[in-house]
Length: 362
Ligand code: NAD
Image (cartoon, rainbow, N blue to C red):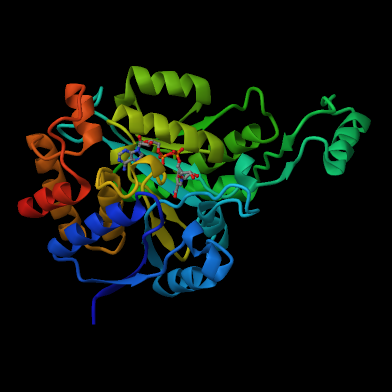
């Protein structure tokens, strides 16, 4: 019997191709993993009536660990997003998105080593929305006017931004515990508390309280989100662990991906008290699907996070060394990296050939 059973969600778009590349690399590196395939995505709608069949949640609950490819959010089906639904169903309240410089990416910086911790369950992602022109929106607009809370134009759509004490405390505590466990020195809380006093203001207040518990062990600072973005672009080496509410976390993590060379190399994980689901930051990139073009690095780096989570540090180190060696050599890289390096995609290799080059370095 394999040492670990992991739920495998290939997803759609470029998902199946980058997942296949990742599985081959992880297996060649010697990880003792049995993949339990439990797919999700719009292609399951006809058979199951939902892009997220129950067996996916059941498989993850049983195995505790999953790795997934990206999943397209179907438009106009009434289903918001497989990704958001998964995070909610399993209460995966932490979205971990490390950004670190790799050789040979042509990125603007070569000294980035930061970890972004994004709250994954509330904020504007709570999905509480009122459509423009609806009776509910009108009622809410009336309520706000009656309470003297402010005037909202009658032709407005409204999305609510709930941020709780519970949600803020647990994500900030998670960031500090991560910092302690991983030899990090500083946590930066990112917010817009000067404007959004009752949501971001609460987040900052709770972050400060939690930070006191770690005083003398981990440094703490806070930054307003706009100034933080400028600071990241000016000098990313100033940052260590960032903790952010959901929406800023989503936006700032793409900015951080840009600092290290793009979405093709940005890994991630969704982590809860019971289960963890590893996945790249990027989406299903439909225009590249089925063409053996996509860069599987982000998926492979997500697998490295998974291997560390499983306690397979040696295999994780081995895979990271092989990926770094292939990128540093620059002879077998995918179109996105080649284009950054040379301005042209000429001489790039496909998803599968890139995986072969990594395997040859193991
Ligand atoms: P995207 O990340 O899929 O792609 C944007 C662009 O980035 C692509 O066109 C491509 O040029 C580049 N890119 C992304 N990944 C790449 C890779 N591995 N290799 C090379 N280039 C890559 O973003 P999008 O187009 O806004 O979203 C497409 C779909 O993905 C949407 O339906 C969205 O909802 C979904 N999505 C899913 C997830 C997830 O499953 N976790 C995350 C984000 C978006």
